[in-house]
Image (cartoon, rainbow over all chains, first blue to last red; front, side, top):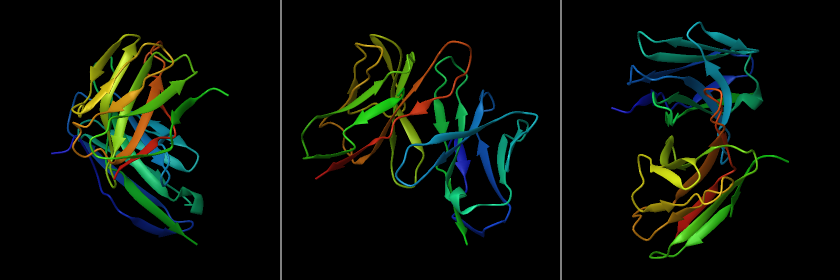
Length: 111
Length: 114
């Protein structure tokens, strides 16, 4: 079983749609949680951290359910520029803070 | 400008050759990391270093070597022992002080074995 699992997609949605991505992780001791965005053939960039209480950044909302070991990302009012691959990421418990990546969910927003 | 640079952007290698990928950062970050990404997959950790002259193996270190002689530099050598080296290689760095801090990534090097 992979440590971090995501639906690879692609999710093909019209502009203005709301789309949700889910992610599960296997290590209940995982420390920190993030969503990264990766454009085609580019490096990943941090989109947002995920907190237990849930957090929002503009059109993006992230949720964490530690009991179910489940992370979600909701994108409202999708823009063409949101088209990218979204990577779910968790960190290890130790001080190395190694990032463990999911394979990513691809989003295509069409006009 | 502060940031992480990787060179070259594209690299072609013949089978049996060793190649070295460069990673430099001027962010004064303590920790540096090397990841590999294959098509349709997430990043996998090759090596990481939290301090000069010290480094640890990641999940897929076989066939790779690194050095950390300077805080700013963390070169990765892909040796001929690496059976399937064609991939996208990403270097990252992070400040250690003050709890968790974001890992920043360089633009990557695409290595192709001919």
